[in-house]
Amino acid sequence: MLSSLTAPSDQIVSPRSAAPVTEDHVLAAIVGVIQAARQQGQSLEEVQAALLADDALLELPVRKLLTDIVVEAWNRIG
Image: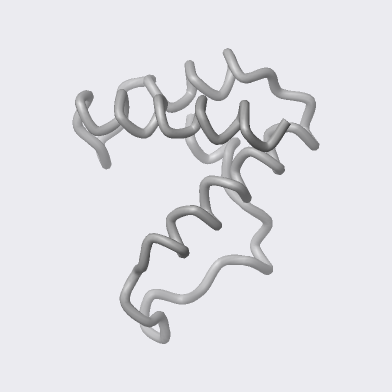
């Protein structure tokens, strides 16, 4: 379900050539996801549901934390 929330492919860096992930990288990824969701006409509630959906990559407590961060960023971005 998170695949519908990915940033455009031109913003994705290959893991083999990537530098260590920083807070700025995480922030840029979250902003990219929010912008992509808005461009696709998704609501904040739809994004939250996608983040909270069962996922093999992230445990539920991490998904909840990420959802809280995305909600705050969504509201700050406007």
